[in-house]
Length: 275
Ligand code: COA
Ligand code: NAP
Image (tube, rainbow, N blue to C red; front, top):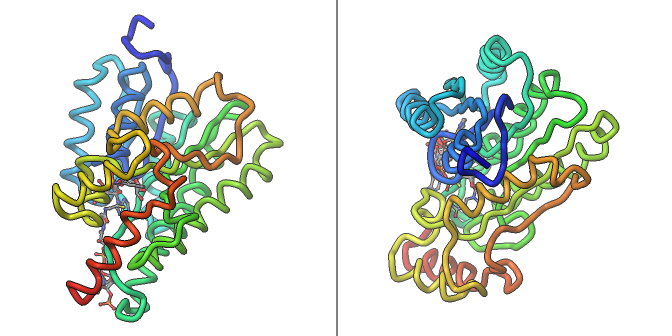
């Protein structure tokens, strides 16, 4: 393609919720480079503005937009999606990836701590999908949820995230049934350990541990944001037009081995730090 990407999203409207840092920002920039108009959203307005600057650098011809909201606040979501509707009219691709994580044992985690992650990851995703639904272009719209291996691999210190992300993937499957009739596809991407991200740094907080995780990945490296972006570009494209309701690990094969380093190291971390 003349835009340097293997895909062409020119004139497509892409919304990336939680798209202002880390993996999701990589995804947002990849869609902009492929020609799309991209809207990003998250809580922190400075992060939102910085992300929009990066989108403009990636594709000066696109109409890029930043909106600020907390996915737990449905009224704020209504205003944010009204802003998106005003600029774009409809949404071709929705990426839902806002999430929170921290290591904590169930015995010491407060109900509110557990609830905060359920509220952001699961109920937040539900609210985002519902808000986007009336704006989705039918048929052909594509939704991608950014899940995590915790959705199907139990991990110590991750009861809140395991419960939330399992719910996120069941939303993917259920809405594939409900919205497929209108030609709306929805899939989950399950990133493996992705270098230079907040999520990975919180669970593997040293270079040495991150290297050990890399060695435990069948492909012998931690992932890059671009690995996830490539999968998202494919899943949202016509090349994936018969794929819906799929939960796709993009993890170098890590989950096949049960993410075992994370399991043992997180257990040790909990014991050492009294989490
Ligand atoms: N260990 C145990 N409990 C914790 C915790 C930790 N490290 N961090 C927060 N909590 C608890 C708090 O104590 C509080 O519970 P309490 O009222 O019973 O004391 C509850 O979680 C909510 O904390 P608060 O700081 O008010 O939440 P918030 O809404 O400001 O932030 C988080 C949400 C906690 C998920 C925060 O880590 C966040 O914003 N994360 C986004 C970035 C991120 O996690 N990136 C990785 C993505 S995978
Ligand atoms: P990150 O940089 O912290 O990204 C989280 C994004 O969500 C940020 O843009 C953040 O911006 C936003 N966000 C957080 N809470 C929000 C809320 N309540 N409302 C609205 N936006 C909110 O983390 P990351 O590690 O790249 O993770 C991105 C996604 O990948 C997450 O869904 C995570 O579960 C998944 N994942 C990550 C890894 C990994 O190795 N990093 C592995 C598997 C899965 P604000 O702070 O401005 O709100």
